[in-house]
Image 1 (cartoon, rainbow, N blue to C red):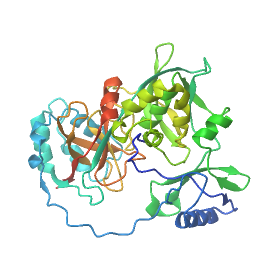
Image 2: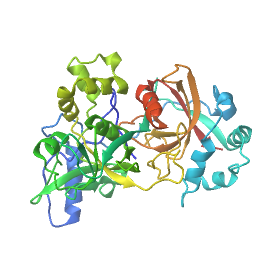
Image 3: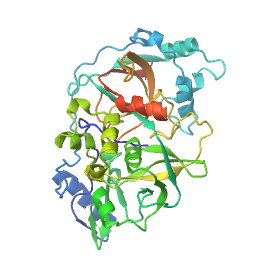
Image 4: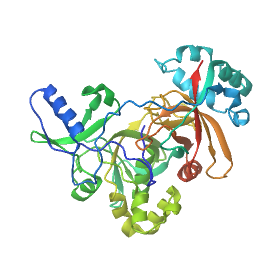
Length: 405
C-alpha cells in the first residue's frame, strides 16, 4: 500500500515520465534513453520537479551510542498491545525480512505472551539506535487510516465518482531494470505511436473523460470521500446490499503529487496553521462549487484493486511489506533509511489528547510522501475515530531503530 499526504510540507513522490521518448526496436536502447532522461532532467507543462538523482555517498556524523531497549524513554509504560500480532504477521511470510528467521523462532508464543515476556525478548535480542537527521532534526510523524465509503458496483446517479483500476494503456517502467541503485522508483506514461508521453493528469481524466471505457471497481457516492481514499491508499466500501468491499492501491498515473492543503493556503481559504485533514474536508464539504477545482489542482491520481477479505477484520490492508497492517503498531517509513520489517520506537505526542505517545512500532509500509530519516506515518486502523486521529497527527518525534544484537 502507498499513500499521500494533504499537508504542504510534504515532499513530492516520483514525477511522471516527462519527455516524449522514442520507442526503438531494442529494449536495451529504451533503457539507455531512460537513463539519459534521468540524468538530464525533464520539463513538461506540470510544475518543475527535479528528476530523480542517484544520491552521492555521504559520510554521516557520528551517531549516538546504541542503548539498551529498557532505557528508551517511556518504554516501560508501553503496554505492547498488538505488537506480537504485528510481528507474527511478518514472521508468517514465506521469506521473513532479512535477519528475522532466528528472531521469529524465538518470539514468545501466542497464548502465553505477556508484556513482560515481550519486554524481556526485546531486551535480550535488540539494542536501540537513535536516528539523527541534520536536515530535519525534529523529525515528523503523521498518520493514516482505512476509511469507510458508501457506493455501488454500477453507476446509480450522475454525482457518483468512479474508483478506477489501472487502465490498460498505463505504461509502468521499473527503473531498477535500468539502474539497480534506482530500486523502488518507477516512471509512468503511455504510448502515442512510437513515443512514450506522460499519462493523463487528474484534470485530463476528469474533463476529457479519456477513461470512460477503463475498468471501474466501484462508484463512490462522495467525490470528497473518494479523494481522501486516494490519500490513504486503501479503504472499505459499503455497498447497497450491506456487503463491504476492501480496495487498495494498485498504481498511480505518475504525475507529481500536489498537496491540496497548499492550494487552499495559496488561495487564502485556510491559514497554514489551520491545515489539517478534518479542516480540509470541512472546507471541501462547505464549498462544493469550488471543491472540484481544488481537488483537480492535484494532478496525481491513484488506481485501485479489490482486496480479498481478511480473516481478522481488526487488521488493516496489506502494506508494502505484504502483510496486513496492525493498528497503532504498523508504520510507514522511508525504506531508503529504515529497512522494512524493522522495529522502530517513537517518542511523540498523541494528536487528540496531547499526551506523550511512546510506542514500539514495526516498519511494514511505505508512502509517496514519507521521505527522510526521521519520518514515519502511523497506521491508526479503520473507521471515523481512527480517521480523526490520523488526520490531526502532525508532530515532531524522536525515533530509534532496534538493531539485532
